[in-house]
Length: 155
Image 1 (cartoon, rainbow, N blue to C red):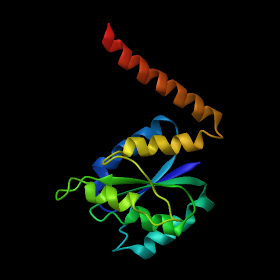
Image 2 (cartoon, one colour):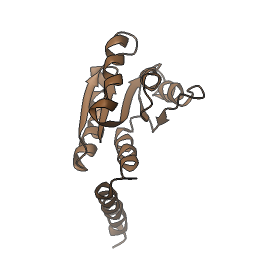
Image 3 (tube, one colour):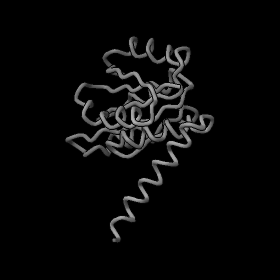
Image 4 (cartoon, rainbow, N blue to C red):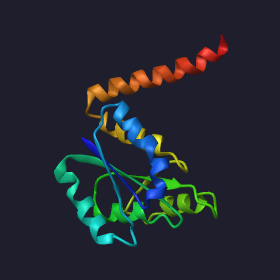
């Protein structure tokens, strides 16, 4: 399974770098695109609706401000969509967060913390690990490393 990563603007590349790095660390393939829900909706729809047939199992969608991108992506597919609200200048990303978590009933968008692209990638990996034993083992190792790093501070 692969993950589609989409963001509304090139200015979101810095935030989304963590998602790509995390997926790569776990050996999960991904494809990254920049599409605007408002400026390129047709191109976005064509890309999103092609993903399932091309072996994708989840989509991570990042946007700031009104943050409609994740919801529009979710409207075009039944693949799981994970929203990453991007911190904005005006409301520090709260506007983006609320736009994503307030999706209407029937069109879900799982949403992580503001600028939380690494957690978005980990959530996608966890979903794939339900049926992929190799990914499950990598996640177990990752969690053990995290615990060891915390406990090392006690010495």
